[in-house]
Image (cartoon, rainbow, N blue to C red; front, top):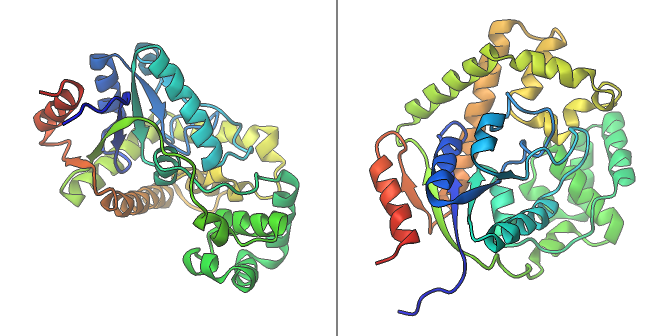
Length: 318
């Protein structure tokens, strides 16, 4: 069988709190790698504790890419991520090092590994206008409007999914063409790498739930609410007409913390809601990961040896 001439890369995927970050750092240290974050929350400055962003000590040991790219009120799309990630990967390969793609954002992985159909770029003015319409009329009304111009998109977008409704209407108003048609166009060429896809996920859902609760409590103990207080004081968020509609603040934990600091929940209810939202995120991620048919799956609690053997065989094939 001919040897695949493409550069090698490893994708470390999994639900939140599954141990992806620790394993990716270990992998990069052991095999001369650099980490490319594939996480939609880690691109935002100031989202550190609640987003489980690698700390300065972890970053000092292994180079990390695609962290802290935007302020929390600034837009950042999956298409922009794919461009930035490819540039980072090109640099890693040029340095003779191993790209380690680590995260749990399925859309970002899809954009990077498979490509996205070309479509109009984001228009901040139009986005603001659509958000203002939503404030006045409600997102369900805008979802109904979307159903009139793009039934296919409306059928797969929930009426409360503000980000996707906004993007679908933005694309239609900019181009006069439904986003569902744009998405059927042939995507750009795939990432020119030979990628080993690894999924880390506890086989026992109760184990994952326990890890989620323990991590949320650690975040609270290390100052998560103080972090959100600092975010609330930033002029770009303090003066925003609808901060909880921003993608950054839809990251799990942040919306719940914001509402708690508004006095809408007590401490116990805030903790319960934050843990529940994180469980729901993990459930969505596991659904996406079931579609990654060519990935190798490991339970990080019990399959550590097999996981590391799979990496060694990939990097040093017999």
